[in-house]
Length: 266
Image (tube, rainbow, N blue to C red; front, side, top):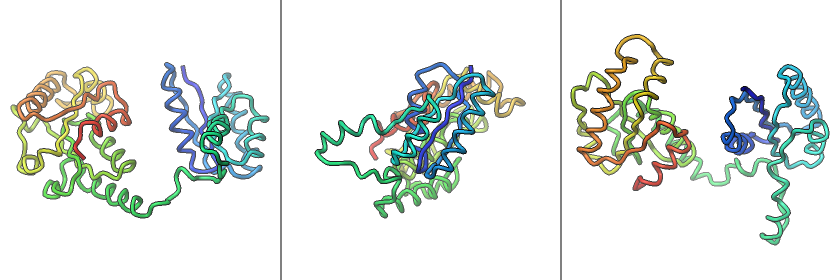
């Protein structure tokens, strides 16, 4: 089953998207996502409503709309124009204002405002470092890393590294072990010199086979026996070297990142 969902905001729409995805993850449904940021004029609300109603007609089912809009007039216009709008801000404001003993500012985009220039620059530097050390590149720069992820191909190293860099300003390198490193995986000098930064990522053979077949179906890359050998060598390495690891089989990138933060000394 596929269901259309709109993530709407008068700013970036990242808040409505994040919360909406979290809520919808509780339902066994495939999503057709529509991101609609900067809906900050009546004209844009009208265009959005037209898109929503058009999608409703095409799908047969009413779309789900998550909206975070500070302008009450625009939010009311959207809600009156389509019944299936979920307001993710206003229901909480009266209670928060009472607890905080003050009125909310109702300023647009506060969640994504660059209010701390140092933190912003830290995140930019972290992203640049993470991209530069992706997939085993520049191992001589591992002394600058906050975290070094280890794993075989397609275990989620790169997206997790970028998520940690973007959201937490962490410099995250990642290093792949491949079939060419068999029969036994071993740590390189840069790993040994930064042992306290190492975190492993493991995955079930069945899940890895499925991912690799989607990526590249030919050769030993997607061969069940080759995959089993790689994972056996990886598990052996982590046990032998006492490297903490996360099982990524059923975890989202956000869950993997949270687990890494929980065990990493950074």
